[in-house]
Amino acid sequence: MEGHSRRDLLRIAAGAVAAVPVVAQGVAQGVAQQTTPLFFTPAEFQMVDELTEIIIPADDHSPGARAAKVATYLDKSLAESFEAEPRQKFREGLKLVDKLSGELHQKTFLESTPKQRVAVVAQMARNEKKPKKPEEQFFVQLKASTAFAYYTSSIGIHQEMEYKGNTMQNEYAGFDAGLVPIQLPDSSK
Image (tube, rainbow, N blue to C red; front, side, top):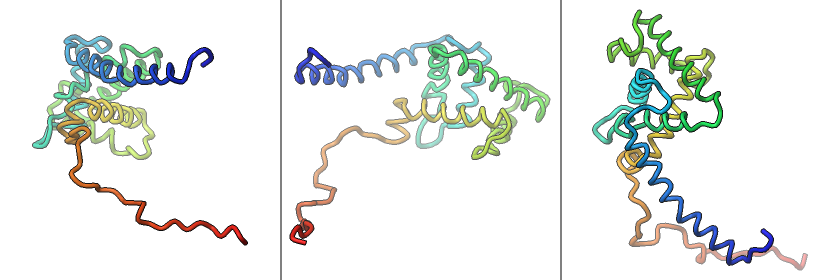
């Protein structure tokens, strides 16, 4: 960093840190405002929305993936991907879901009943620890993407994990290292 003082570098770093919440808020607002898919077809978007909701459903504690707009996040991420491979793999994965649904229920995934849809996802998740089949590998990718999108959303952070932000503690909850005597090795030996 020739030509920059240490103070300049600290100022640049502080500016970058201050910009992160603004950028994150802008991305979140962009996801929240998006109404038509950028990458997925409307049918693919509906399918991804349903798949992610099956993976992280709404419950008594917090809303699910649909409320957190996970499908919208995935759509935006894939639309902005520099590489074609992630987009191609995701589309192929959705075709595998429909193929498996056809084998199990003689219907596409979206034509299936909610119970049948869950059965399709359960079949894909059977070998989650050691996926061998392409649809099992897609499930691992889909689940990881869903979890990332959900737990970085406002709903995932604040409602599911109940993160309250940095809060003042009334008492010190750590270990006071000052009370432990320090024993140095004997240097005379």
